Length: 362
Image (cartoon, rainbow, N blue to C red):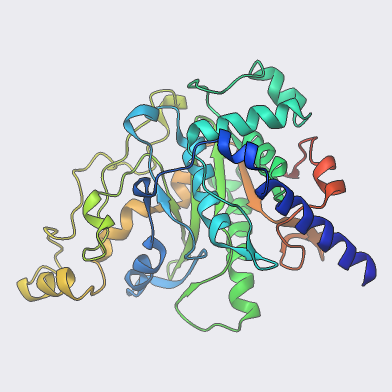
């Protein structure tokens, strides 16, 4: 008990030391609030209650949606997914203080990655990027996000899923994500069809693109959908008003993706989806559309489609990396998220994370 209390104090010290570093926070740029779309998770929740959904599990509602902008189109997905993790960290408290002082903009993230490299974090990754990312369009991926978080004193774990299984489906990946979210519901003995958990979102990387996993949906057919925030999809400004329901723009494909595989559904190129003018065969009556606008009734089920990615689409890519906020360890022969470990690193743990490590699922 005494040793655990000592480590907790050390962790708090690391966070407090970093948050109190005025010189550091004067140098970095903070993300503007109008770049963020809050409240999407709770607004998705009612729309799973359809005949084909067995159950669904969503991440913490502390998570905001962010999209690539005009200036970072084609190279900014890693930064935007990192920022989505940061929105959770900014609102999540440990020992009475937020885990992260502010969400950084892209230049701020780049600056801190370079500072981490200068301090000896991820020397191999630093060399691969020539020790320089600030004010460049260089892509970042899982290891750079891991390095940034470790530098800030925040615990994270990387899991490698090296190859798909039978029928080119990533069963192990889907199984792990399902257990990650379902463990919370089991602990809380939740019997709801849709459970909003306290779990952080997941950073999901494949060759050429990354996305943020905010949940998983289990269908009565036995199939599964990941629920993801893709920076390539922009939620329209109409949603940023609390008076309107979420709307989603079509995906902006990254021209550097392997065979343009960033397209997760065959029909992703469709026109803008706008709840105020949406004509759904089941919800098209004038009265229901009126209520949807002014009383926030559930969205038509097709409005969930831009956030759904089925297991077949996940199978298009051979390898994935998942970055998890917090600690993942082997427990009873399987990898499980350790809810007791906490998010903050003590000085010794932070030092060890200078070398990037990962857990591997073959």
